[in-house]
Length: 363
Ligand code: ADP
Image (cartoon, rainbow, N blue to C red; front, side, top):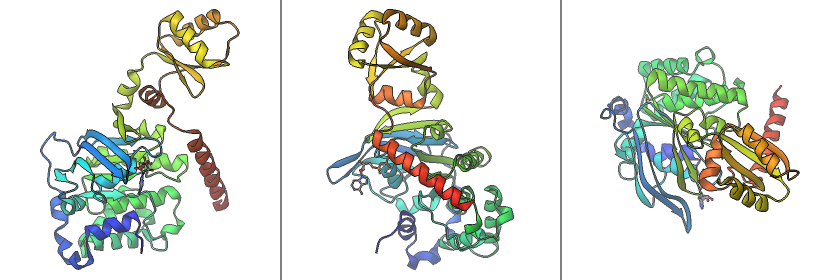
């Protein structure tokens, strides 16, 4: 029999024989970590599947009440990191601590103190919001009035109090994700790990989920680690770790990361990118890259520089774009290649089309 990630989490967390011992679960959650110390600490983490390296010496810290993003393209190691932090997997090398507990050596204590929201749906849509949460509460050894009060409070927090008695199948995608969040928050964790929490949601519902994540951070000082492959979501994080092929390629706030580029990013469509890039490099004594068949330059006062380029190389430039640096530019600068491969883009287009069709069917 195979188990989903959620099943595995619950199975390893609370073997059925020890459910009765769980009534003391709520206590340690309110324990304070030493002031200023990181809530999550990842040190030189390495993981391999057979001979494929998924994480290659990754190190970062997450601070208290921080909304921290783990951004990377497909295959960069985000899920592997998420699984290690949520104790579903033991790394081959390095250490990962959450709230002072070593994920590999002290998993049962760690599991009690964190909330986890998996990418795949874990709610039962045939049950009401309250029923879903009651089942979740039982798994954590919560019962009676305490559980009812928590359910009421958590539904209030995620904006579903008025839908408490309705079946989850009547909820929109965004509301269902908020119910997933409520499940992760029911036992009062100070740390919430979320794996691509907006997968499959339309842009409005995505914004909705992010608004609740910010509320959790601001009003309840919950520390959040969110994996994402979407730049616009990464922009909403306080700080980011950007992964590429299992390596940490950038760490900082979105603003800091973009600031290091400085000036504007100029992209040129030309017929002979390799040859023209060398000539631009030598004429203007600057770094020039060819990425995906286009020439990329970073320069202050981009508009002015573009007219110098047209003057210096008449008839050679077909199209030009000038923009303020984005996180994709940061990624390209650090890795020398684009965030999305052509295959990823095709997959995304198909996914978006399917999603659109699904939405149309519902309306
Ligand atoms: P992401 O979540 O960023 O897409 P993953 O952590 O899933 O990245 O994958 C990182 C690398 O590890 C990829 O090369 C992927 O193919 C590989 N990988 C992930 N899971 C397995 C597995 N169970 N067996 C073999 N290789 C795996």
